[in-house]
Structures are given as C-alpha cells and as structure tokens.
Length: 292
Image (cartoon, rainbow, N blue to C red):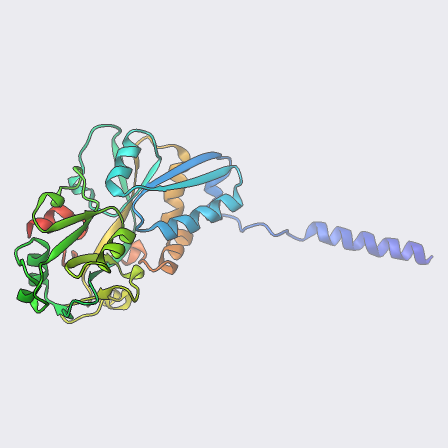
C-alpha cells in the first residue's frame, strides 16, 4: 500500500515537472533571429564600440553554439577595406560615411549608437578649458604653440585616429600624427606633452587629462542634457549583400537588448541621439584637420 502511494506521488511530481516551462528564453526573444543560422561572423574595424559588440557576441554564441564571432581590430579604414574584399563581414566604423569612397563591394552603413567624445591633453599641459573656436584652430594646426592657447611653451601636435584615403589624410598636414586606435592615442598622449587628441568619454582614465570645452566637462550626463556637444555616431559597415548572420547581428545590436548593452558599456542608445550636430567633426578627420 505504501509502495503504491509513493509511486503515485512520484508520478504526480513527474507529470507536474513536464507541464512546467523549462529555463527557456521568452517568446519573441531578440536572439531568435539567429535560430537556424550557423558559421563564423568576422568583425573588424575600430575599437570604439568593441566592448558592447563583444558582449553582444557572447550572448549570441551562448544561445546559439553553432554561431562563432571573431574580432580583429584593424582600425576603421583598414576594416572597411577588409569588408570590401570579403575578408570580413562587419566593420565597426566610428567615422562619418559621407566621405567614404573606394573600390570593391558596395557598402551599407548602419547606425547603432552614439559615442560622446572628450578632448584630451597630456597631464603636464596646464590647459584646463578651451572654447570651440580655439579647438578648431588647434586641430587644424593654425595655432602652433600651446602658449598661444593658455598652455606651455611647446608645440601643438594634433592626433587623429587612423586616417586613411577613405577618410581624408590629415597625417599629411604639418604638426599632426595619425594613430591606429584609442589605446594607441592613450599611449602616445601620456608620453608626449605636445599631444592634443580626442577619445570616447567612456575610455577616460586617470592617465589622461580631459579639457573642458565652452566651460563644460565631458560627461555622459552633460551630453544627454545638451551641455557637452561633441560626439560621433557609431556605424556597422557591411556589404549590401551581407550574409544573414551579419544582418542578424546588426538587428540585435540595434534592438532593445543590444541598445541596453551599449548603454551599460558607456555609450548612448541611438534613440537618444541629439538633433544637433557635433560641435567638432570628430567623425571626419579630414574636415577637422582643415579647420572647417
């Protein structure tokens, strides 16, 4: 009798367990776009947006083991070339698509987020604050000495992120230096008191000295409230006939879950892009270098 009662209880519990939902993700999950897809997605380009892209990739591959995502950070210009040559599927592109030209596959630029940008100098530079007009002259090489802008008696050396023929070539101008990435800028900046550069607000650290612009400090809060007015729009560059995996990745990063990842990484969701232009064209190195 006891044995029959115990068996009945066990059967009831087993039936209940079968009826209860398992630890599956909710219906309509953003990652459902990857269902049935497999293979490798090759991501290249800028380090701007990399943290968010990596987290997105980790979530995707955890939910869909048949998908792998590889990252090769080459800089934005080289990344574009690789996508054109079909050597990569997506380029993280932190420049304006306006001036992009070049042979190879026709490209599509998909905006996915906003990156507030800080102006930085070496910690030994006494400059604390600059106005936008002076900054434009400094980046264009029109102010040769820091002493002419409230700094020390040493030359101004404007640094640009990895200029290429597809984005203009400010590296050909006097008193400028071209660097391949934000880490390269940081390395150069802390070793050279002459450097003037710009970097994502999220990447500021104690080794770099941010400069107030028009009396405002470079913070995400100031940006969202319209007081800090320097930023760039981040894009995913892909071939117009890109594979479904690349399309799904772009859709995920632009969707609610991807945008939340982006904001946790220190950027700003695309929906919160301001309706005003950046005070400095940091996404167009050639324009910035020309003083326009």
